[in-house]
Image: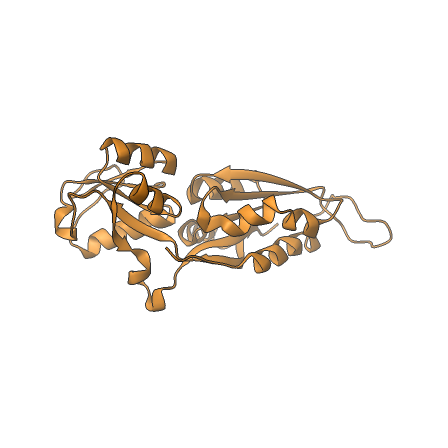
Length: 238
């Protein structure tokens, strides 16, 4: 799967968080500029979060923040958990998918969060076992998503609705959706406990290679010019 990643823009955005730092923090000598003692950043251990993975591992963010601000990281499985941490002031910023970001904006009546940078386009797919060769074969099947309400979960439910299937938040309907963390999804798929999953990379490829599945829907095929937001950088407004 082709994934477009913009590491440099995300690094600039991370640095910008320090320039707009909150009150009650140390002041750099002679500058008068308040500098926070730490920046708490969330992201997922997915290829679609390569901007975060590379930025943290190669020290781009730590360098951009400077010596007075420590980078603290938190790894999440999916967006709803990251957004909960953001809204509860457990983290300051997080790489997240568009649906959880929109939900956070709506839940806070537009007050709590802002999107400050794009990060990734592409890199999500519905992978199924060999018994499913077309959408018509999905009736009665069990399909996983990373978490209820996350970006891939919404994409899966929307697509199934277009195929005239019903789903419920509790795993009922014509197709049973079973939200679970991505590592569990791979194990469940290999063991035959689920029939497929709509997941981001690298999990889609791992389901194909390790689970002997095949791609039924490459999400790029559903969007104009094959481009769609998978990951963006969201921050607390305070």
